[in-house]
Image 1 (spheres, rainbow, N blue to C red):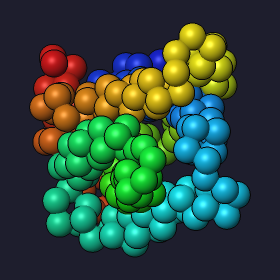
Image 2: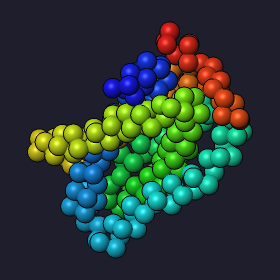
Image 3: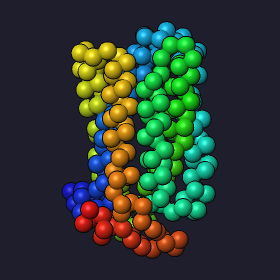
Image 4: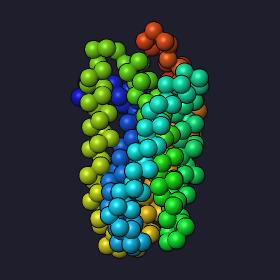
Length: 214
């Protein structure tokens, strides 16, 4: 409860937690739609399926390598905002995945999505570690993980139910647009772009007060 009070009392951590919860909820739907669409609808074989989803892993690895340099150059806030901006059209691109040449849109789109998503995750993760009092870091992280990962199985249930009433391609569009919505707060909340953290671990949290007003 102390961790949750701290997270919900801090405007930027509250945004990170709620946006992360929506994102993980949508990820639960992704788990449902990915094999149904790629294997069931488009007829991708086992080897091809493995290669297609490995694009996300390659992108994530590149994002992890680039994240420290990008954060050092632009700061935590601009990195979070910029990564979210880049993801918006990429998710729409993935939604157009289809037969023929359009099959390539999935691994390409997901590769770039994970590249910038890892940058966003590193930026928000290091930001929250830096601004949180040391005595509360464990409880803060546990509370955020509870909010985010706790929504994942709920998304899986909802994805399964939606799969009974809409087509698989429509479910893919729902997943993509849901992911767009999950990342919009990082773009629309002006205080995110102004976040700064001192290099010595001090808590210079410019933008947090403006975020509370926003």
